[in-house]
Amino acid sequence: MTDHTTTHAADEDARNRDIKIYVNGDIVHRDEAKVSVYDAGFMLGDGIWEGMRLYNGTWAFFDEHMDRFFNSCKAISLDVGMDKAGIAEALRRTAEANDMHEDVHCRLMLTRGIKDKPFQHPSLSTTGPTLVIIMEHSKPVDRLQSKGIRLASVPQVRGLPHSQDPKLNSHSKLNCIIACLQAEEAGADEALMLDPHGFVNTTNACNFFIVRRGEVWTSTGDYCMNGVTRQKVIDLCHENGIPMREKNFALYEAYGADEAFLTGTFGAQTPVAEIDGKTIGSGERPVTKRIQALYKELIKQHTA
Image (cartoon, rainbow, N blue to C red):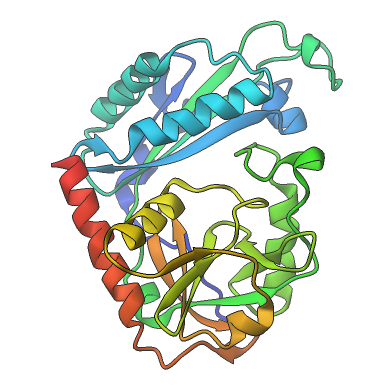
């Protein structure tokens, strides 16, 4: 069997067997945490989620995550049922119930709620939204930093904004799941997805960057999830004299990159070892390592 890993590979932590999960104001053991089969999220993928990370008792870049979360909910006319302070309090209660302070990953999920009948129309969700918060003790495995991730370019593309805008962190992730399956069938760890015009865009789970001749490149952002970590890396490059370009580029240029890496809330910056079986660079990755150091310092300052 091919040895697959993922950008979300984490060390096993026995404490996660007994975590407590927030479900609409109640905080219960994971075995008791349930939602209805009539819930719009389960039935239709009708919902918005957000991934966040807890460092030193502080949610990193909380305001940026909440801006994206509330904007996404507004875009699909999903009433959150509380303001940003209410979300912060729900997060605080959940972290406190689990005695969590560091190396914690959170998945905040909001759906349109329980439907009266098993059909599509949003008006059938009459009970109000369902809010679930899952927090786990979760630390990325060290081997990814040395080994790197293997990508395969796939037929599945990121769609146009007027079909299903990729900027929405929606529960409906089938487009990305199909891409992930295609990559796995090609013997890779994750999919490198193109935009509708054939330019390199993002992976099925993370944002994608390359380094060529000292310059850092990433996509224009028109067809990808505009990740919080993605933006932090772009800002860090501009602030620290690292040439940074948001541009269209082809697989040809990605194959010939000196370095490549992924960004995401969970793994921060994950090196890419190969694309379509082609080794990327020499494995030294000096620019990636500098960005990683700058990002760690930014996290330290933000969560001190």
